[in-house]
Image (cartoon, rainbow, N blue to C red; front, top):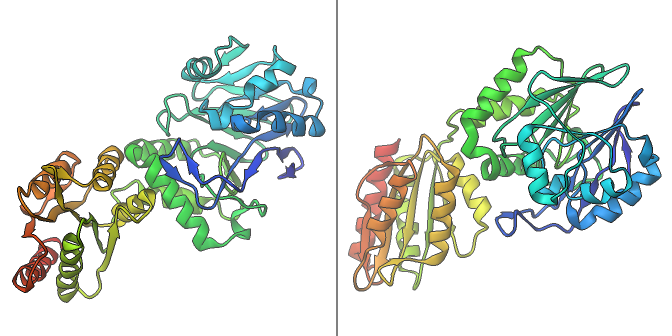
Length: 396
C-alpha cells in the first residue's frame, strides 16, 4: 500500500491493525500502530526508513510495485531500532551497495542488529544531501529516544521527518491529523510521549528549541508511527514543549494493589477525604493488577501528587505494584509529590518500602504515609478520611 503526501513524497509503510504490545511486552498499543516509511522522488530517489522485521518481505514486495529498487539512490536511517530498520536486510539483498545515511551511533546500532557492513555514510547536525530541486538537512536527536536517532528535513516541501518524535501508536487509513478523532489522537500522542520520551524531557525541550532556531518552515511533520501532522503541525510541537516543562494538572492519583480489599477500601476513603477539601481536583483510583500499566503512567504524568498503596506480602509489596514502581522510577517524573498507604496483617513493611521507592524515584515525600491493620474497621477508615483531608491540604 502506498499513499501520496506531496508530488515528491509518498508514504510506503505498513499499517499494523493487530499490534497490541510493543517493545516486547512493555508498551500497550490498543489502537494498533504503523511503521511509516517515505519515498522521495526528485532528481535523486531517497527512501526514509523501512518497516518492522515481521513485515520485511511484504514491505520490499510492495516497494517494488512503487519503484524499481535499483532506482533508489540513497537510504536514510533516522533510527536503527528494529521497528524502523527491520526490513533493511531484506532490502539490501536487492540493492547491497546503496548508501545508507545515518549517524555514527546509527552505524553501530544497525551493525548490532543486522551484523552487516553496508555502505554507510555518517552525518551530523547541519549536514546536507542535495537531491535535485530539494535538499535534505540532517539533525541529530540523540536520546530521543536512542543515541542514534536523527531527524531529516526536506527543503522546498518543508517536511520534517521526525522519526519517533511527535509519533503515536495509532493505526488509521486516514493518514492525517485533521482526519482522525482528535481525542483519540491526543491520548495516543500523550501515551507515546509519557512512556517513551518522558525520561528525556530536558533533551526534548532543548532539541525543539534548536530546531526552531534554524528558522526552517515546517508545513508537514512525518513521524515514524501514527498519523502525519499536516493541519497546523506546530500544535504538536507546542504540546511537546508543554509536556517537557514539568507538566502537571490539578490531579491526584491513587495507584495501588490489594489482597483482601483492605488497601482498596483505604484508597477509596482517602479519595473521599481529598475531594472534601478540593472539589476541583481530579482524583483517580487505579488498581495496578487490573489497569494497563502504560495508562497508569499517563495518569501519574498528569498528576501533581500520587498516593501509592499495597498490602504487605512476604515483608514486601504486591508484584503488580512493584512492576509499576519500577516503571515510575525509569520514567523519571519531575515536579511531583507522593506518599504511601497500605493494609497489613503481620509485619507491615509495605508503606516504608513504597515511601523509600518514591523518594528514590525523585518524588517529594509529603509525609510518612498511613497503615491499617487487617481489614480496616470504622475507626481506621475515619483515620484514612482524615489522612486524605490533610494530604489534600498539603499538596493544594
